[in-house]
Image (tube, rainbow, N blue to C red):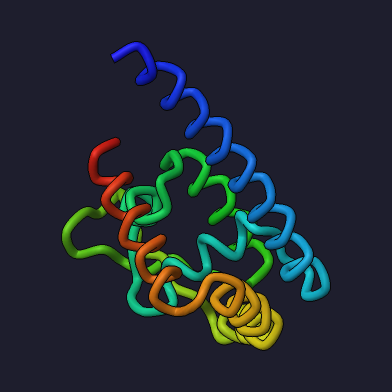
Length: 142
């Protein structure tokens, strides 16, 4: 029992480090096309289907207010559009514009190379297990 607090602290430290490393890698991927990781997150969340700010926030694990700030800038830049939401008049659905989709597509080749290198470093089976473990960890946190 005495090890649990230390194990939790060690895990938190490792996750914070990995988060920082992933954000830095993301900035290297997004910078050349004029995006940030935050903008990429919001655009990526609505590529499959329009979502409101709360839906994006839930999907990405960030605050609705943070999503709204980024979304407003993306709308101003013509990369995102607000659509009527039949389920909630005051919470528009957000959808990527053609320019927003094009911006994300510019990142895709470098992101694919990055992902391939990560998967190769661990092997496909172990990498899938990492994904499953992170999903389970996220469920426990929720």
